[in-house]
Image (cartoon, rainbow, N blue to C red; front, side):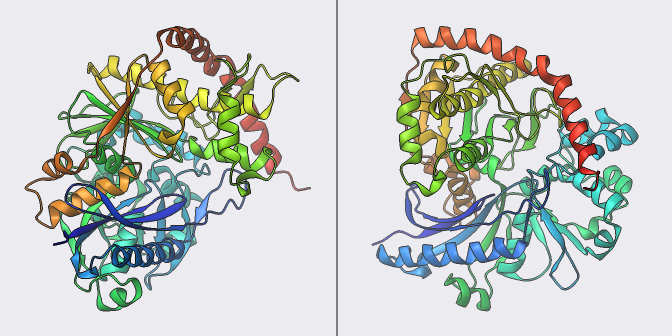
Length: 516
């Protein structure tokens, strides 16, 4: 007899994945669809919420086709939960349309508010309430920007919603509701009280009635309506459970529910974290609610991860990603380049930097470029810069949190790269366990759905029962010594270029204001 299934729907920045999981955490069926993103002007990134829905419908239909092809019935699906891109916000009018394009977490239009809002409200107070230093990423500053610059859109917005809240409303009807772990990345959520922060909402002159109702992970948010069932082929009445942020879901997907285990997720952004039962905030990380609804995640985030790799390939490599072998070719060539890329060092802050510098005006730097360097050198230097930055963050967080990390689990598309996973092990100087589950965010959502469906007594039990196996990549001591030397150089790069980058950001902003 075939087993029952749950679906983890991962609505990420660039695509939607609908993956059906069984009780052992094995992926049985899947469907995928792209999500377009728009870059209307310098440093602005937007999406149309309708595209989130269209992508989800396509992914769910493709998953349904695969479920049937594997010999299951669609009625065997017993629950669904959503993992979503965080810090992306939609502005919905009273009729359910968009009052303004959704602002994506990569957006930088709120740079001025990242300085001005904490100056008036209090930086330490923001940090204590939200677990986050002022930064471009949380929706708090996009909200402050909109109120100052787009008052008509602000007034026309009936509901400010995260991606999960939007999709749940489309799936189940009713009002907007979401999970704690989609609410807290917005930067206006009190992490200890687990509710919207009244002081922050008062400062924004924003009533909580215009925000989704937040719920504990695993709470049933509704059921799939008859109309949506016809559109997606999901069973009518299928329960939908509160999940949320893709970073927290990814940590859950590799069972990061104990203090000595860390996850490193190489996706559009590079996100890593450790779990703690205690609330603490520090400049070495941003604090978030854990996906199992118990404890907290201390998380590092480099905004430009695979986004940076894809940008380089699309902009500077012949044929870009239209060449199906482009990454295989670049990986093979980069493996032949020595550590340090023959004197080429890159700072990967192409979209500002969060921890540990918290500088929205930081920018990318390419240092040491010569006429002898090739695209393979640049490709390797990009991967090295992401790796070095990750090692710097991990070691700094261990020290500040007083937690020793004994188990590092690599997930995401980058974990498929022989170059990157060996580089990470060598630079860390400790084994890196590569998860057999690349789609950890979708699995984390599936674990929450499994708990909601009654398969397990807790979300932690679901993580213990469904987390996949890993294979260890061992570090090379000689290469580790070389990376330690390179890391010492890398640590100087930000401080050496900080003022120049700030001057150039300000100069570029002034030039944008000049009409040709």
